[in-house]
Image (tube, rainbow, N blue to C red; front, side, top):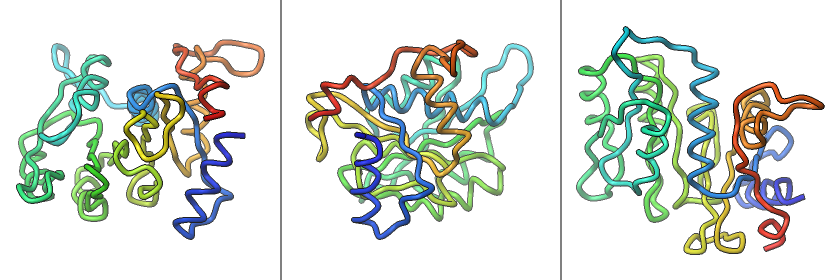
Amino acid sequence: DFERSLVEVICEHQHREVNEMQCVAVNSGTSALDVMLRACAESTPKTCPAGYCMQVLVPRVTFVATSHVVMAQGMDVVVVDVDEDTGLMDVDALSSTLQYCSDVLAVIAVDLGGRLVDSSALARVCRKHRIPLLIDAAHSVGARLPDEDVPMVAYSFHALKNITTCGEGGAVLTYEKSQAERVRELISHGHRGNDYVRFGFNYRLTAVQAVF
């Protein structure tokens, strides 16, 4: 199927093992970001004082969808400065910004124009604060894969990307089977087996899109 074929092609290119890779296709890159963050929130139960919102850190340079999915889930966007040469999230800026933050759910770093963020360095900072690092990989399809530093990545198959599915499409990739199952339920109105077990959406990739 589309998901397995995508994983096989990417893993072959990256010389990575296919067996454990989980891929969930969705109808857009924005949908991929949305369910990736929702799955992260469900698997990382955190609370904050009444009257306050959870925070998600994003880079100053990114497409608006990265921030919009945070806002749509009732969380606060905290902007992190970027390296002036690359436009990518700056490691030192992330470290200093986190010193002034509380109730942080996650950091969403962004690969930009095919240039990859230093996920290892960013992850070291995130681990000190016990928060997950997620990657908006809309600009790095095939080059960015989840690993021990990055539990989930979000792809976009928009018409302007290097892989496209008839104009729109996306995917969430992870090595964590439980997260993949959670994402599959979220994109199909919470459907599991013969029941609907959670809140969800219709974010499924159509068969016509998958063909392309």
